[in-house]
Length: 462
Ligand code: ARG
Image (cartoon, rainbow, N blue to C red; front, top):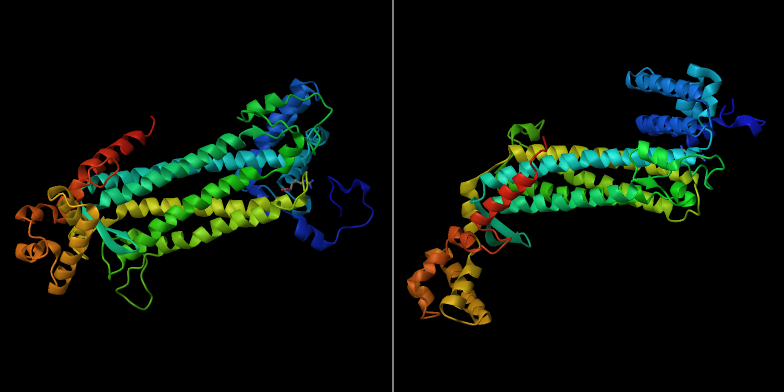
């Protein structure tokens, strides 16, 4: 049988493969709530403007409510023969209310319908991300406050660089998540315009009220160009790029968790809730959740590049290619939601090994910069010279196999005679972090203040 919605001008049957390649109902059924809300808004507007009768609008609204509860109760029969969510809903509406159902599609097209539905869906997803990222930030800031003075090694090139505090390291991710939220908020503001009323591509001759449907659906305004309204998917791309960046941030932290929790490193211990065991090696505590967060970044970035490829060669206006905007987006957004949740759980549960962190922080002559800084301000050496002198002292300590603060004063004085015993005041890891009290620096006092500031900003509104 040919499609009952558009089969009028067709003589012979579609090939079964046509249905298979064409149907989107298997995935666009996720849009059912948005599709029904947009149809209700459209029907109410059609009645208000006198395009359909109030009675038909009432029947339509009632039928749509029934369909919504059928879908939510799992009782709705989705049909591939009806292609997509839009025609599945309309088809069922016809069964429920008869000919009045046929008036719903007045002055609209599936082209403005799907653009509207998907904007609404992405908008909802962004709101969920924002809440999830705020929860993640709260977990990080809370842990940062508890560990504002827990000293750990800071790295560059993954080589021990300078001591930092664990709290400071965690707060770095709070800042990144804040910018991620900012990117989602920007994307949300830009996508929040209504395509409804653009119809197939050119607008409509019916005296519709686009401002009314826009307002009902929570959009700031109707979109200004009907071709643009049905033909662009930049709102999906923009959201996916925000997702890709957020996923990349989560992945970097996940990678650190994998490294830190390796017995070889042993800086943090994950709770039993976020690890798995091995089927052969009874001792294993594998950080699978972190590994999967890291790996799934690929899916999110993949969805972005796939859709960019789909869109880049499309002439205006709607092309069926654009139906490919959904699966990747659904998958990427679902993946990211799960990743944020898992990272939040891991952060809440993780326990740093403070003693091991402190020891590791002092390894690799991590306070060498402190020594150079001290030579600069205590002895008034130019920094470049202080750097050189420190290098020689480090070489001596390395040859003797001792940490900088364990090297005898005489050994240092052999290189720079003016060094006095006050130098030992800057060589411990605690003194090092305490001294870095510039705004944004790692001093425990700063970290405490920043963590508190974040926790206050992140307080849930009652
Ligand atoms: N399922 C379609 C999509 O997601 C809906 C729009 C169909 N429009 C059309 N002119 N065939 O893109």
